[in-house]
Every structure is written in C-alpha cells, then in structure tokens.
Image (cartoon, rainbow, N blue to C red):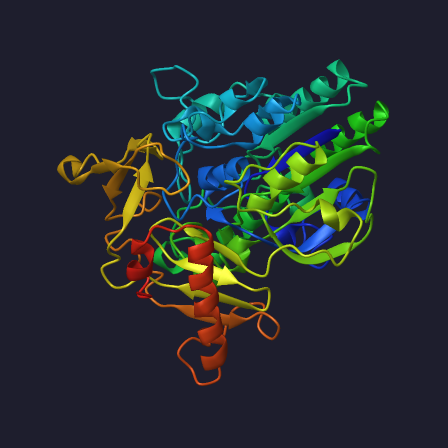
Length: 501
C-alpha cells in the first residue's frame, strides 16, 4: 500500500472550487483531484493552531485539552512509529519552519527520512548581521527583517520553500517508482502568511501595483477596526492570499502529475487537508487564535482519494477530524491501531457511504474556549471569568518560542497526571494562553459562550446561547460537550474552568 498525506497550512475551505464555486481561488489541480476523489463536507478542526494540529494527526487524539503548542512527547504513541513497526517506509518533505523552533521538536525525527526547506516566516536561516537591502519603507501589518533576508535567496518561483517541497516529493516518487509500501507526507507551509507570491499569480486577481504602501504580506492579529488598514488594503491582502493558494495548487499539480507519470496514482491513497483557516477581514478580524473558532477557522477542507478510486466524485457527509487520519492510514497499511488513539478510521467509507464515524467533534485552543459540533449546531463554551483552574501538562515543557512555567517554577508539580501513561509529567499553572500575545486581556474576544444553528445560519451571525429559542439545543450541546470531555480524558479541572462542575 502507498499512502500520501498532503498538508497545506492555512488553506481555507471556501478557497477551493469543490467547496465554493462562487468565491474560490483558481485551483484547477485541486478541483480536478477532488473530482477523482471523495470530498468530505463535515471535516472540522481539532486542536489549534499549527503544532497542536500536527500532534492531533501524529497521535490520533486531541492535544488542546492537555497542553498548548508543543513537541512530540516521550510517551506519545505516534502514527509514524506505528507504521514503521509494521514495516512501512516513512518520509516527510516540508518547509514548515516551526519544526525547527522551540516547541516543534521530535516530529521530523520520527520518519525514516525527512527533508526540511528553510526560510519561511521568521525562520532564523540567513546569517547576515546587517539589515537587508530589501526592507520596505512603507507597509501595512508587520515586516520581519529575518524573512526579508531569507527571501533574497529565492530569485525564482521554483527556489521558494513550498515549491521546493513539492519538487522534493516528486523526486521521492522518481527515486521510489514502483515501490509499494510507503507513507509520504508532503507538508507545504503555503498558503500561510507571509503571503509572498510572484506577480504572475497576482495578475490573476487584478495585479499587484495598486496598494498605497510598499508592502502588505503579513496581517496583524487584530480587528481591522483597531488598525489603520483601509478597505482597499484588506481587499489587496485577500487577493494576495488567493494568489498564494493558486501557486500552491500549481505545485500540488506537479506531484499528482508525477504519480501519474509512474503509473502510481490509481492505486495510491492520497489525503489532502489543512490545519486551520484564517481571517482576512471577515467579522472585522485579521489572523487567527485570539477569536472564537468560527467556521472560517474551524470548518476545513478534506479530500480523500481512496486506494483504488473508490467513491470518486462523491461527497461524504460524516463528521471527521484530524485525529481520524492516524487510524485511517494504519488500517490502510494493515497496521494495528494503538489503544491510545481516540480517532476513528475512515476506511469503511471507501465501500460504505453510510458507515459511521463520530457523532460529535470537539475543538479548541488550549486555555481558551472548548467547542463542540454535532454537524447541526456549533457551541463555543467560554471559560469562567478568571479562566481558572488551568494547567499545562508536559514532559517536555516547551511551547511556541519559549519554555513553560518559567514565571512560576515554585508552583510546578510533577507526577503521573495523565491516565493513558505512567510517564511522569509536569503540571504547570497556566495564566495566559501560549498562543496569545500583545493583549492585556487574552480572552477579550471569547468571554461569551455562543451557539449557532448551521442549518439556518451557516454564517454564524445569530447567537442562540441564553435565548428561549436556543434553550433546548444549548442543553443538548452542553451535555455533548461534557460527554466529549469524559471520552477524551480531559483533565478534571477543565470542568471547573468551563463552569461545568
């Protein structure tokens, strides 16, 4: 069995023609792939943002209930270890720069072989002390000096990190043509910001020369109304994002073409998805993390070409999440699914369109809201006013760009706090969500619980929480949330933090 997982960071569902034919980016290769695959209509985020989502994939269980952004833990039972134990060759090609930072340790090293292309975002790659010569004088949002240094090393599109990632995946196919037992993970950082894209793609969306600044490629994580960014610049960055989606689609197409060239496409299982969405001015938001997990962030694309083209051109209505990818791939390769896995294999859907998956999906960012959907309703449960008690559980106390618990080492406990493992972990008091910065009140956008009926209000504009019209549904969703916390072994204090005790 050959399997390929393609993960494109920050790929919004509505950018693909197979999900939204009216406002999508130009994605001819993904759309053609979708026509030959099964398109999942009810795929939801789990743990957010980037590294938590990857730990969901690697471990088949939610990261966000126990800890924020962080590395593979020594007690984790992973997809890659399980595949390798079954004799499957594993390889990853990626330009996801967070793997090389504090809080991203241990993922790449799981694979038989791995290749990381440097330079994305603020990756400390080019070692030039002096300021780069390409710093813009006027700009909206943010400019990273390090990224400006990095980008000088790719004068051509094919030299950029995500194109190099797809080219390396094509090289892997060339080198292993005819081999029949491997798992290849192709992880492109694009279309994550900075929305750095050649003008040839911007020309498909009205051109690049009309912005009244030298630069706008990294939006601030703020409300538009709290910035000086005009509507014309919001429109510009929306078009930049679409252009980058189109560039990523082009390079995805080269991988599909390479598989077909070697007659390896038809009997290879290929999964395409993302980790989360992004706000580009909708609801007055730019960025991610600090707001509720509305559908723009949480309702994700997921397209699966089953091993022999089963269900091609069909839609799947079942609820699915990233934690389902691990058991799906293990079953496809004939490997046993570890008991620690909380996801559900989707392989039965290849032959049975009505196969059961799950009846709810939990999702969230650690130390913020905990959310649940049953496919009809989405319910966002806000924490109590002081967001306490709240803890981070980790054997390796690293998180995004820093170490956990440095402000309160005397309050850290160590013990066997996680029921799935005898491995001791640190129990670290958490007073601030790790992914939220530049805000005095880290929860200012999520103080209230929200309930939406997706059947009548997919845009999530009418909050039913606390209303007579939504009382019955809210009771049901609270009960479903509590059931999910139990079934997914949430730490006991989560109930008190969420006002559920």
